[in-house]
Length: 114
Image (tube, rainbow, N blue to C red):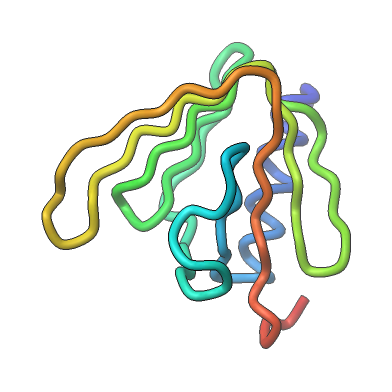
């Protein structure tokens, strides 16, 4: 098993226990803090990239992701680049952002079984 496969497995296992997650991007919270709860709907590893889909409409493409770090109920993943491609809730308006060399954090719900 490659390091990328281990990273993918750690993330999918974390979501299996947390079920829903808040999302903190390098620029801050996506949506209102602790209000938006996202479900991992698809995940795949591809040659140096990790693709994560939340809620069937938020796509995170992490290039050279680091090993996930868990602390309390949260999961942090570093990356060399992140492309965040998403559609607005309700209007499906397309959006895209690119972040270089940073981290994302998935925030577990306080009532999860973690």
